[in-house]
Image 1 (cartoon, rainbow, N blue to C red):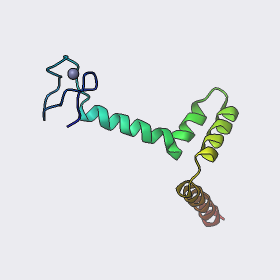
Image 2 (cartoon, rainbow, N blue to C red):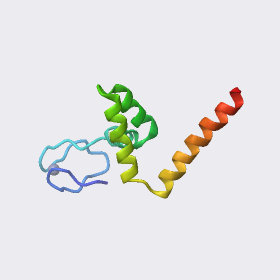
Image 3 (cartoon, protein in one colour):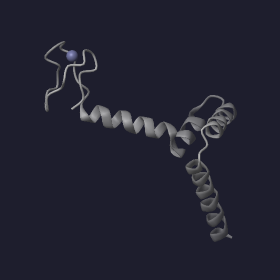
Image 4 (cartoon, rainbow, N blue to C red):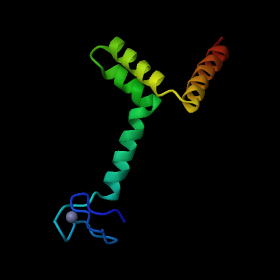
Length: 95
Ligand SMILES: [Zn+2]
């Protein structure tokens, strides 16, 4: 298990609280939520949500695009390709 974040004490299986310093361990639910939040932040859905919720969506869109460009990998290019292909296929099926 993960050691205590505050003092590094080795965590026993189902302890919720560190016996050394009294710090509460993050629960599995916390870790999952954190992971999901992280994933959401970098997902297409998360980006869209941020752009929509931003006060200045034009600026937000610019920021997101810059961030995508900066961290563009093969996987990122593939994702963008998939999105474009999907939109294209959708347009064709409507026409
Ligand atoms: Zn501790």
